[in-house]
Amino acid sequence: MTSAVCRIGVSGWRYAPWRGVFYPPGLPQHAELGFIGSAFSTVEINGSFYSLQRPESWRRWYCSVPRDFQFAVKGPRYVTHMLRLRQVELPLANFFASGIFELREKLGPILWQFPARFPLDLERFAQFLALLPQDSSAAEKLASRHSAFMRGRVSLESGENRPLRHAFEVRHPSFNDPKFAELLQRHDCALVVAEGAGQWPMWLDVTAEFVYLRLHGDSALYRAGYGPKALERWRKRIACYARGAVPTDGERIRPAARPPRRPRDVYCYFDNTDVKLRAPFDARALMHMLKIQR
Image (tube, rainbow, N blue to C red; front, top):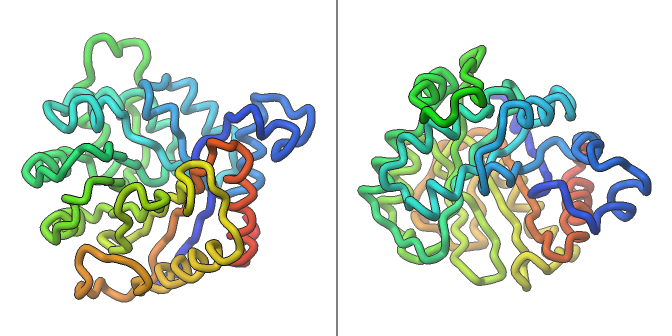
């Protein structure tokens, strides 16, 4: 049995109030991602949620961080929020053609975040999951069917075939349905454990061979920092997930489910960034509690 890898990071890295506080005074903006790479082993790329990025951007990000670093990539809101998973094969092809392959071995999970007003449509999610490529070779085939307007700004060589990890952050109470959790498990996709200050449900289920956590704030959405008690609660949960168990101190969609007990990689991202100063320091504090150097 291999050991689990726990990666603690932040959501995004380009925040002006971090400059001179978290980032050293005088650090050039173009060097901020490199500093993130020296402090953490992972970060969420948020720009891909808002618009298609260009291959040169993905390439620059790849070159800015150490070889053992991993990027989580946020899937486009055009797919999740605007189209709401309807007729998304071409937009998915455009997303994968936009340069994501330039991350190579540093590509971590792809995050699919859905709006709080999007209820469960089991058939629609099943169709979407069937479309999602499970490895880079399948993603390359999908990307080759990109839109004509993408010509001249695509990267279609995936290189060595690697498995892809997908994580789903859902926020509507209707997803509290065992059929949804079973659907994710069949496709080895993670149900994101998302703490949102009580604004939406949080389920602790394990549905994949890895676990994905997003901490948006425990008492105030996007703003609240995490004190020692809150961080200790998450330390225990992460340690539990990493050794292959499931925490028992919260709600689960399938409380009786017993996933195979084997080590699981854990990705945890602090997204309490509206104050713009809490996330990196909370991440560092949790790393210290978990005895993670970086």
